[in-house]
Image 1: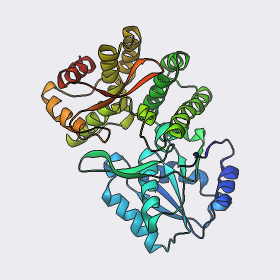
Image 2 (image 1 turned 30 degrees about the vertical axis):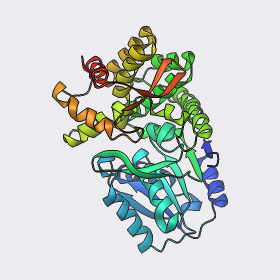
Image 3 (image 1 turned 180 degrees about the vertical axis):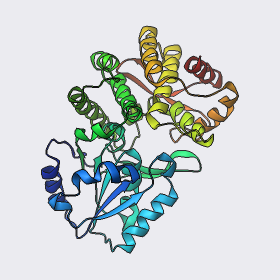
Image 4 (image 1 turned 180 degrees about the horizontal axis):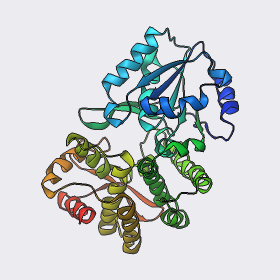
Length: 349
């Protein structure tokens, strides 16, 4: 897999024009959801390079990251005359870049695409690294492929369109990257004021967070080894996210990751010696910002079953990424059902 071409840009029109020049195409399509069509498409719709682009819109929210929305994108590409030489720009959050990347990777066996992430979550995680896909049968990202965008253009002024919950959602992935990085980065993240965020400081932190992910992805593009580090918080987090969706009470992805971080840092402390002071500092920050999920003990068997469907597992063993300290990653770790239930108890109580 080629090195991802990620550009942190303050000159969006110029850098997008250059990207489109390198990404030769006969027709250009823009994929948005209902929210980005309203809030973000007007920001770029007047760009000279986009004057002949065709707009495709899907419903917003992760609940629509499914076969129905995917089929709609394929149908619109076909109806509007897309060829193997066309290009798709995915303008939106992680749902749009995940689904749009998968649509592009599979339409006519693959057309080029460019990511323009508009949420913090998409900027630091979903749009970088080459993972594309959709949810299926109630399971997160069950169907998908590895396929890099031709370019990912990160324009942090889009963050001004976000409400606080969506800002916090993306910040959870940044916190994960900090835990994978070093003490200074982790501590700075815990000390940042999400209630009154300084967007200039946050922009610099976004660049650092993206660099952490890029470094890990380039070392292991297809997730056969160290890239599993990026799954920290996600084994339990994805189970919580899927369970909440099944209950008709969906939560934002980053909130699920934050909850997963608390539970999996507890496992890290019990099983791998992660320092208890750092566990409690991280858990305190997450509880203050994200609260706790609305889960009761009777949901534990279902959560364990959802974890057994995780793609990282080998056989029936539930597979975790854990830490022995900040920046000290241990992949392919297992835990007993009792350990996991204790971790959920720590999260909830």
